[in-house]
Image (cartoon, rainbow, N blue to C red; front, side):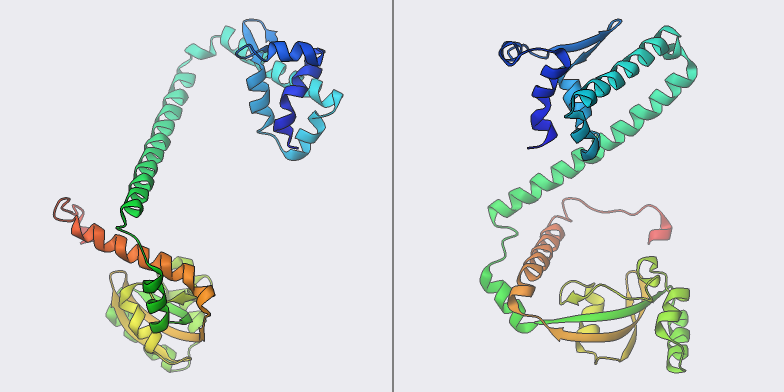
Length: 280
């Protein structure tokens, strides 16, 4: 049983009440456990604050001393709040400025949460209507064509000249991993010598797929141009996956492809105009 489920019992011990009395109190909206001047500590606040501490401390609060100590912590906080209010901190310019920043940050988090919720519910509606439906037959057909997983390193460069220069160094004996660490613009993979995540067909950007999956293990490939720049690739390994191991990944990949096609069909309704020339 969790500490949160014990919380109503904890309140009993703090107040020194019996269980029958507690049942009567439970009918009240939010019983007050203690008052500090004009401020109150309620049962709901006690339980909420208890849920914010570590499990180890929650276990301690199950003891008689722990319960009282935790209430004392809340009492001390309320006393500090009361003193700060009476000292005029609420009216200070510093307090107001920092509160403005907090409100702005909270509004930004709320806007992000709103956008996430809108998109999630829209995607769920697309799934219900079948727009993103991936049938078992589609998954099986994809697996029959592409049952393999590959492990690839890559080096991302800004220009074709840089890519050709890097390719010459690799053919001259430069270690691929070392060159990726020092030259690749993809910081996420550069740190591991250019190693990308193991991928099945559909999990890498389209410009690289055919090159990667048709290439031989151990072969250095490229340069290949994509919207990100110029890629030099080295195919490290390839293996055939079982259908069970690949099924869920294929389904997610195909759902994403259907979403991409659906978004393309909406472009005429929502034209895109990039204003900053550095992104053109």
